[in-house]
Image (cartoon, rainbow, N blue to C red; front, side, top):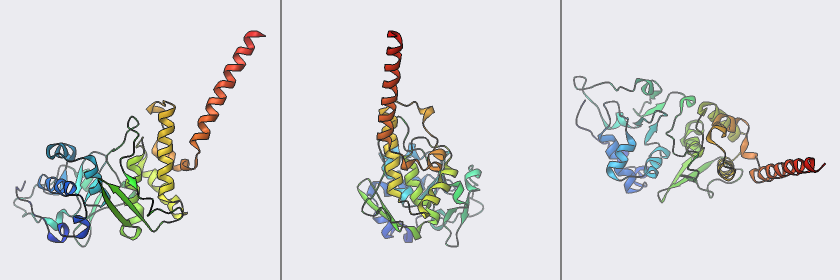
Length: 266
């Protein structure tokens, strides 16, 4: 594997890159320095700990599309081939051929996912940790707006337009990072796109996820009973009123208890 790494000024001098927090930029440099000859890194969290970066820094890089993540935990530098050209006699193919097969190279030499159905992201939130890690900007996400959105992480406001992302993939990555049970991502993405094209705002879906997380926590629901992501998106569960459902459950339990008591005294 080649030992030297280079960085293209057109990327690191861009407004999009410079608008990120310093910690996110430093994480990007460290990830790139430790990438293999195809731009893949298999231990991004280890590198984060080494340099004192946070999960928010990684989330910024994902949201702004400077790195592309996979469910395996591997990430790839999106603009790797713009940054680096490695001579054939020094080049060593990546070990992550499955991930590489999901990518295509655009005319400008940047990586892109070959198909939106293969989009993946590392698990940022689990059922046991229900607090939101990333928050979509309400000022950009009007109730009926599907033109733009913003992400605020680590004190940085990341604004992205729909025409900057293929089929809502950037937006979905942020939404998906909030969902507690990350199973069935491919189907969840399809239903997400369908809902967005019907005019459902991303903020509505995000709020639904947050309410569901509170419902899980309030009712002490075991992780195995939490809906898979594909089912939640397919059933458009962002429309559920979890507060009302909680009252209904409590009332039903109370009614059952009263009936049992009455039966004893008959």
